[in-house]
Length: 450
Image: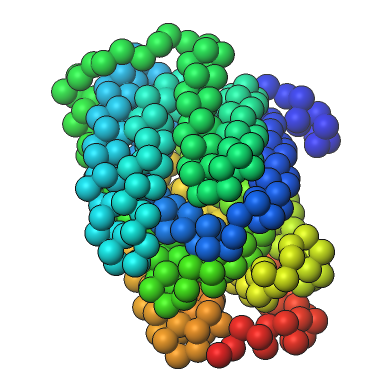
């Protein structure tokens, strides 16, 4: 069957491919918008502002992940994922969680400001924390659409809300020349998403409801997701949390610019796999038939290959790109971009395996693998930054990915989703690509060393 015929089909793989295309396209548009706004904002604001926002992001993302009970994965995985009482119970949990998170943002504002020696966090965090409160009211119709891989409208509405938030952020930053423009813009974006999803997604509105059986099921599944997302925070935000104690606000802001530019491909991959892999593993497991295995291999090869192409482009053009787009205040971002792109090439290999455990309902196994990886990442990052600054930290992160790769393979083999041919081919490609990139960017990368 041709790719065109598959894309126009009504089966699960057809919906997965269309969902991947929708998600990828919308994500690309959003990133272009974010890049354009970033270029404008770097001329309206000072580098320290991006350092402050990096710290705000660390605290808010930490709160969100430390309290994530996996409502979305639970709805995708559960046999009751379309049951009204189950969905309303899940929504009630999310609303209560959002309220608690906002209150915690208020409580943590002073300690965070004192720890990082940024008193302004006392005001920024409670305001930015409103985004967590607002997001708690997002309808479960979003998760229902993800469960059935009906992603077109969800993706379009999400894209529109992000565009609204970005435009407002730029306009307010131009008017205020302050971090408040970034914070107020993010609040408007959260409100836009809530309003658009409630108004334009089909389905019944959520109501407050507590069904004990649904609550027990969600909590049982969610306790391991809660622990797992704590590990996710360590792996996704730990670098900024740790570097915040070693770098000045200006240096952290410059690091954040380089990280932002390099992280587009891996975040795109995470957005796609997070939406499509659980339904695929649940209903079209590769071990069930040769056709399933072949289709999943094609999807996996296309995703990995595409992400590596994007990361390779970012690594090769990173130095001239930073100098073209940003003024001299942000010149130090180019070696960060190149180094982070190389590290993330290693992450791409195992991107499609983790969700197999969640699809099988084994959030516990998912947690243990993530916990081991998070511990290795944290230890390696801290040892690296103490030994050789940012360069040592990123080398430590790369070493942790390599050392913990066998754990991911054990998980993939346990749930019969491992593709040895995929890993052998693309592992070789990644190794060769990193060697060429390092040789190409020797002079720039040397500036990362103390």
